[in-house]
Image (cartoon, rainbow, N blue to C red; front, side, top):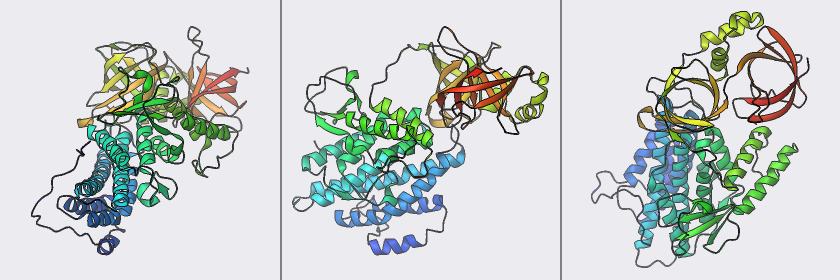
Length: 524
């Protein structure tokens, strides 16, 4: 298979000759460390753009790229701080940071792909395996990090991302170098574990991050998943096409396509042994499940995948999610129906608390908090319905709507011509040009009751939402409150409709980075 990688055209007579001496490059980069990440990114991008638009020997290009790579990795990860913790659609500062990070990884990938193309075009290839292996792994990592920027900003990845990854891996297999150990620098990678890796592991890492369905993860959890996976990627296996008795935890990859892997059970036509391979994740899921059991027993796994200062509950939720996506193929239960209409939407517990609190003036103990909520709460935003199902809907942001959406966040919504508000959860997001934002809403409850919750021995109340029991769905009554509220058998005093009740927390139903939903029983 001839290489048709996404690379820039080279100029025959460049005006500026690229610097390729590693020592000189290091000296020039020393003065950049005191600058802010956007300025460093602009300088690095300019130098790499010059380097990647002219003919340079593969050895000199490889040395120059390796000199730029550590600072580029640090800069890209610093830029990620501006777009990895923000609401959607992205604000201007976050857009600038994301665009800069995307451009850096793209240019770095260009450079290593050019090295590989030049090495493959040489008439005499003896002794080039090590350089080819390094170029392929570095190119794959840059392309994967490029894709990660798209994941964390909820944009669809360009098709050339997958075309490049598949071609790079196939080239490595043809050369027999996919399992050569390659040294890595942690500062330049961010998401890699240990001091060495292989082309195959880098490829599997990219495949698995796509299969994690990052549109459904928070920006922070996308990065945590990438870092955690680096410690376990050895447990996933790539194999040739063969008959399978069990297709669970098995995914098909078409190396001649520009598509990501798909669950084996969802193949429309049988895989082609000449162009397709299999990714099997059963051993990976087993190893993750062992880590999950350790965390549930309040013990940190010894493999290093969980940081010493990690929030165990956060990782319990993340690993549970990854097991589902890398193990059992997700199936849609309800069909979607295209629908025309508009909804009004508010986001976050304070705004929802205000919307549902139709009797705020009667709650004497909630006056101060409710007044603060009202003063800080923006008016509802207008969204357009794309389609609906029995349990949720897809909606598109109106250009005038607030930029305050987070995956995993709570929202209150109602049809534009109705009075009743419902409670939902943002399950996924998809961004586009001109601040386009589509989100998937799971309906949690048809209504809710604003309340105040006070943990025993605390001196202040906190906003909470009471969700009614839904007998038909076998859904018990629950309370929604801030993260950290739940402890087994903890008692809360709940005030609503000018009445106070004492409740006992009995089971954690669901938790995100923004709220906890808890089952309870009334004590009095």
